[in-house]
Length: 284
Image (cartoon, rainbow, N blue to C red; front, side, top):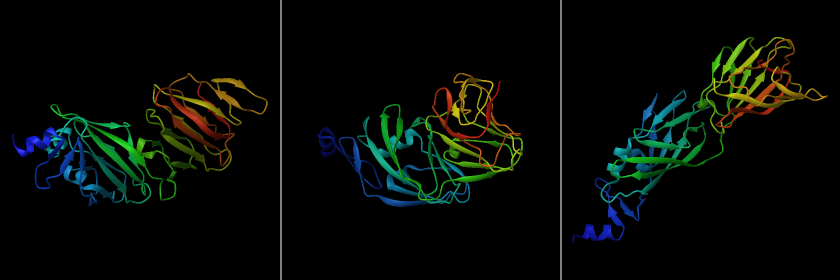
């Protein structure tokens, strides 16, 4: 029996060149090096970049989507002795400016957990890559942690209809133009958006529009709506919890500067109102 076979029996093995990394009991340990990525556009990560252990990503002026290598490429690169449960961690830093959000996408046979992973400018996340199938390569990428944003919160002044995406998570939208529609993405657990009316009194109609399967649910101080379940003396209205595919609007004639709404996704039924002020109405 060769020395390599003996090592493998003991749970110790070597990957291939050029780095010849050592694995112990399915866990890889290696020296981190810094990889700088300045791709102006969507990027496809390489296995070498991941195995280096530390990535500084500058999106260069806009939000970007970076895609992992395929599971086959990852498993092959880990080399001789890779097993189900072999892991390695990657530190991923967004070194860009405000609004330059990075969205991670999985390559072929790579699953993300959670399914939506985004990184705001100034944030750092730790990703763990776990081999879940060796013979028919499959890899799951787990988001272990994300640092607090080191920059100010994302704020966007909106002057036209706006389709919101997952990468807008945490954004505050300021709207001072009449009759504009915010189209929400399909609900995802934890996604959060803030809307503030900055127009003159009685000037702005703001419409929040969920996808067909989603509802907007909860309560707003001084709200009113056709789908209200109950109204209290102080004007608090509980919005219907079961009406999907219904717009929610800050009515124009009663709108005031500073009217606001915060929505958070539940990943199932739609969007819950986390905070709100002003006269809002649910579609009948």
